[in-house]
Amino acid sequence: MSPDEPRIPNTVLIALRERGGLSQQDLADELTNLATRYGKHPQITRKTIGRWERGEVVWPQPFYRRLLAEFFGCAGDELGFRRPRTVRPEQDQTEPLPAPLTFATVPTTADPHLERDQDEWRQVRSALGKHRRDLAVLAESLYRDHRVPGLKNTGVISAPNWIPAEPVPLDEITLTLDSVVAEPTVTGEEPESAPVRPLATIDARYRRYHDAIRDLAAPRLFENRLCFRLLGLDWTQPSLHFGQMGFFDAVDTNEALAHEFAAHHLAIDNDRETVMPRASMRRLTFRKLISDPFNLGRRPLMGAIGTLTIRGGDSPSVVLHQRDSASVAGGGGMAHLLPAGIFQPSSVIPAAVAADFSIWRNIQREYAEELLGHDEYDGSGKPIRYDKLEPFTTMDKALRDGHIRVFCLGVTLDALTLAGDILTAAVIAPDTYDELFANAVETNSEGTMPARAFPFEENTLTWLRESKRLSPGAAAALHLAWSNRKVLLA
Image (spheres, rainbow, N blue to C red):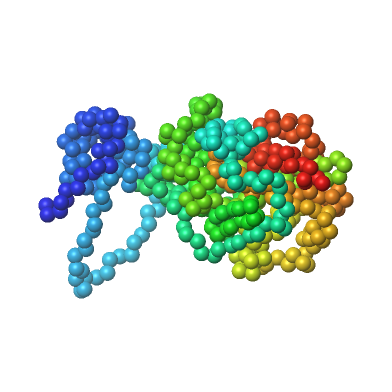
């Protein structure tokens, strides 16, 4: 440190030590003991700690920074040290250019602290995939004022004005799209999300949660597609207001919230995992930062459309979808609505964005992909010719003729991830249903589909709910549809 440079105390390091209830001598002893595990015997004393904390040493040697990072369970750049600026002297113009840089041919050994941190992150991520439904039910208790009557212990929460008094026909809802909207307050890069973002290097964490998923636990389907972001809704004069966002924007908040909750509410010991009996907000720093889950300006809320498909007639039935945890980034391992998909355009081409800004078009594409096995409309192709291609033309005609009737049931949130579901119900006449889905597939890229439909009647719906396999969105849609069956099946 330059004698002329003012000393700036390292308040971050001081806070880390005091939070652990340690004196400077205690910390020195702990670091010395930790160093012996690596066969090192450094002279770390109370004076050493004092010099770091007073700012006399602004950038300790790499080994000391690694010891501190490992002891406090953080990244090297979270210790409060200031990397010194490198001042290059003027170079003699007659001096020959340096030799080109070369890369080492021998791979370096991975740092044990880095490997351990990433392994722990993977372990929590894996356990999260197995216990999503139970964790969602537990997280629901954090939002007691937002439980939906009839849906207690399903993981569903909602605001009173997010669910209409009765299902709203889809053609009565006005959609508006703003191309330029204010950025959300919370994006997932904040310090409060740092504990769920694992180390990328010994000195830095992953910047966003999706970066960690991509490198450490990538599912089969993981692309940053353009999506429609829900900004507001009003059922008095039915309307939904949207902006635009990326798929990864949702992952960085929704999955980070789920990971944080799992890390503090799952007991993981020798591969045995148990969900804690009670939920607490005490250590959920990122969830506390988001605060009100229904403040649509505070975080990006991706509009996902889940459709309860009802084959009508004298004996109505429904179909559900078993999602595979290894294939999707969220919602795996649970029975979900079929079809269900993110509200997004089929292509980034402006003409496609305009044509696909329609809940009905989104439902049609999901039917084609999930039930009929069409290749996914992944955002790279030309706008879809809905007036020329099947099954879209047949579906459009059936909709005009009243053989398909589509309603919006409301908007709910998954209490674990705070991901949103725009819940819809499509009632399809028996002959039309049988014609459209005569060649329905039994598997797709997101998992398996049950070979049989479930009767749309109270005993079966009760059995499905008590099976504890329903996703929060599926539980909500089934309950709201059954409560309003006279409207839907009229």
